[in-house]
Length: 228
Image 1 (spheres, helix red, strand yellow):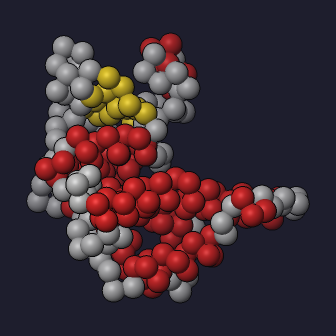
Image 2 (image 1 turned 45 degrees about the vertical axis):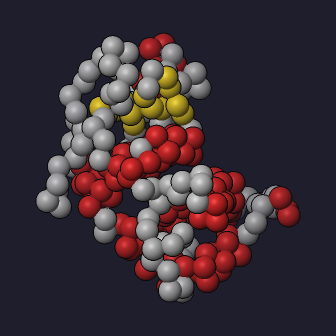
């Protein structure tokens, strides 16, 4: 696995040991980006796979972890964090030594970081989902109702990001941050569904991210079903 082992640990009592981390995970969901971040950080964590197909996310036990029955959810520091953006924000600051978030005292990079973190969930993700929704409507022969100016068109977003990434290895400076993970995971999906034709800067950035050992470890173990 790219010369390194995953940081997954054996199951443990998180409540008895608040320093331990437990990620409630399902493949093909936003939990993947959280697991990728944990691998980049290098902190040990327990992976608890939630079978969506078997309805485990709606079990009484899991609803005590996440009341809406969604993944991911993270048990850490004696509390529970959910929403992948919220988890990534928390982890990047919690493990500041990993360098995946500019410090609050580093004003300009931190401001850019906050912008890009919010951009991933508030601007980029809705635009990609709108592309998927429009395609499904076309395939089914039904009318696609536009959301109007409330939604930034994906083409505008892709053009902006492609220009921003021209000559840059990452979104902010010369070092990867959690903002690259959140936005990169979405653009990797956009690439897979054919939305990035001609967007060479974005394609190069995504390829660079997907070549990282931490990302490869997550993808290899997920694809092989080794959800330990």
